[in-house]
Amino acid sequence: MRARALDPGDVLRLVDVLRRDREVLAPFAGRGRDTVFDTVTDANRDRLQVHLPNPYYPPKRFVFPHIQRMLRIDAASGRFEPLHDEKPRAIFGIRSCDVAGIHHQDRFFLGGAFRDVYYERFRKSLFLVNVVCTDPERDIDENCFCVCAETGPAARDHFDLQLMDLGGVFLAVAGSEAGEALFAEPFFRKATPDLVERRRRLLADVRGRFKAATSWYSAATRLITQGKVTEEAWEEVGNRCLECGGCVYVCPACNCFTVTDRKTGPETVERVRIWDACALGGFTRMAGGHNPRKAVHDRRNRRFFRKLAHYFVQRELSVACVGCGRCVNVCHGDVGMPSVVEILRRRSVQDERHEPVR
Amino acid sequence: MSPCAENPYLPKVAVLDRIVDEIRDVKTFYWHFEDPAEQEAFRRFMPGQFAQVSVFGAGEFPASLPPSPTERETFFTIRKVGSVTGALFNLKPGDRFGVRGPYGNGFPMKRYAGQNLVIVAGGIGLIPLRSCIIYAKDNRSQYEKVQIFYGARTPKDLMYREDLKRWEQASGMECHLTVDRGDETWTGHTGVVGALFKKPGVSIPVQNTTVFVCGPPVMFRFVLKDLKALGFDDRQMVSTMERYMKCGIGKCGHCCIGVAYVCTDGPVFTLEQIKKLGEEI
Image (tube, rainbow over all chains, first blue to last red; front, side, top):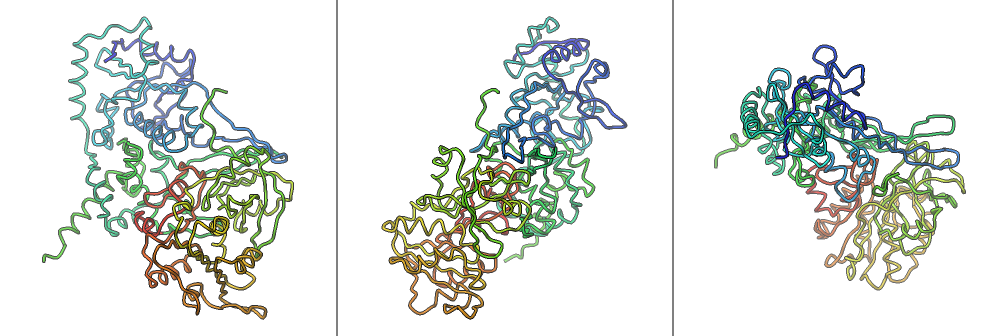
């Protein structure tokens, strides 16, 4: 392990080093429980905290913005040019679940037959400083289930630098060459085997501090892949869905989008892509009005099918659920991922039990 | 700008050459790419593939490719159904619009070599299948029997009338037409397209045959039943699917049916594949 020790007082100095040549985004406390990713500035840097609840609005928007300008078009001449954003950015304090979320987006947008260049440009200029959730009060929410998703509490890979608060001292682990290069800064000290051992013990302890939420995906994946989920089970999920699309917008692994042309001046148009949600009624409606997926449970279940069917897991080699628990927090109908997995299992097991004995 | 992979969302500039009326609300738009190199590259498409058409300021939509790669000209046949197709209908020859593609798997025409081809189309379902018909006609020696069955609501709704005349007279292929309701000029067959299979003198070989089916959902269901009754199995029947699409390259998520993306895994599927997708169509 390429690791160094860091004094708590020097964490801000690390942020300042990152700010020299890039925009640094970090979670800040807002009103009540709310936290939000914001740009670190001279004015707010002293309010930076390492331990605080993970923001609802996920950091995927720094690689896949909510609204992204793709082309600038001159409507009169039909000439157009692509619009790209290559501003170097760093996310300080991204949680392990969200690191896995960005890795899933990498697999999706950069894999397959076509590479998404808009995503690629954002991703190439993004530096990730992962903070391990170690404070059961402030970091871990009652709906966190990264332990089931095997994405946390400490990410194993896909970050540039990982910080872990061992109490009075931080252990920094490099996950990339760019991350390791930061160890040249004078405030990093040599890590001792004792610190590495403390890290191991703390992680084992934190794993036991997770709360009620559990999600046994493997069973749900098996039921879905074998086609054993009954129509009634899907309907139960569908009946609880209010079609708000909230779960999709807060999900670090969801990535559907729509594309539209919008006027920006008398003769200028921009082609933009905007997050879209499979729960919404118009998602599959074609011009002319035909909609192959009409019933709400068809649409609702689409999302879980897409996330859990073995075919897709194999396609991206990563599950489209990272265990962040955001969908549980925002869902008015209590059909976040853990509830759905439970409904699918309970319903299917009941049906198996009621099969007539021959 | 740093070198990145080519931008797959970037349309290529096309120039509209001429517009031909087909039937009510359906027109054929002949066009060419401004850049001749693009035109050459594009002409390597396969029957059954599609392209994304941009009308700048209105948006983008997927459109199947009715020309065959064996033809010289490139064109789309479009029904005016929404805002972007509506904007396309307002363009005049000489106007610029955008095209990117070709996308999708297309019909594996080379794999069908040595087989009988049965092409069943209803209404504007003939648009994507026109490409297969012309391709088979221009590579006639590669295929055994070639039969076309085409139905429309009325004689006024028959697509590609010039082509139909040529196919009816062409030696080496059969072309059977029908309409749901005839008019005073109509002397041909009246009835649904499936009824043509039992017309006197028609004999459809079941062995070593691929059937192409494309048309509105109702026609699709009944034709499948008729073909089943003739003895065809699900592996022999191929169709091309239509879905709301925004990217054409497997990213936007709109065209997903069960485990398949229509844009990259399709739009051509055998009936056997369609049944295994894991979602009702």
